[in-house]
Length: 157
Image 1 (cartoon, rainbow, N blue to C red):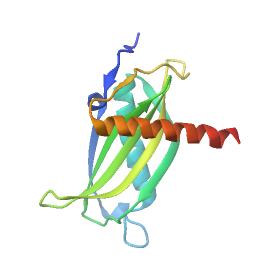
Image 2: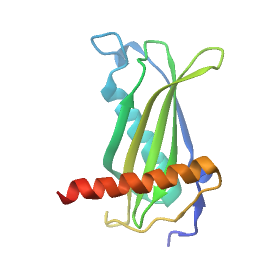
Image 3: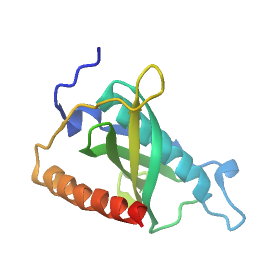
Image 4: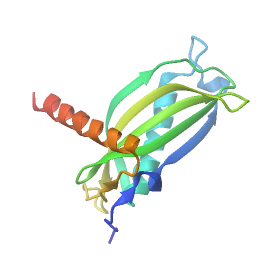
């Protein structure tokens, strides 16, 4: 039996580091967007697995915004955190940064993904509620509720 006690955002926060290699570059000499989406999906999955204690699947990549390019030899830092939980789903925000050698970070991407927890039969299963401890976490939770309602309105049409 999986524990459905509420969990804090910090309990499942996930960080992944990548150095961009030549095989990650597109024809324009920049990081291939599809590769970044793959890394984002992995970070979101690990974050959701940590929160739910279950295997998960990606239901929606709701928002993906590229604000700056990344190039060969850049260090990427991807940070995932649960922003909202429903009955069987979790919204996960993944922020991507380029980290310079002096440690300064530039934000290059933000993505929101909806992940669904799965039981042993690959059916949706309940997830623990989310505890927001900071004002930022609470604001993100409230914004996630709005995004959830917008998603529902889009699929109803």
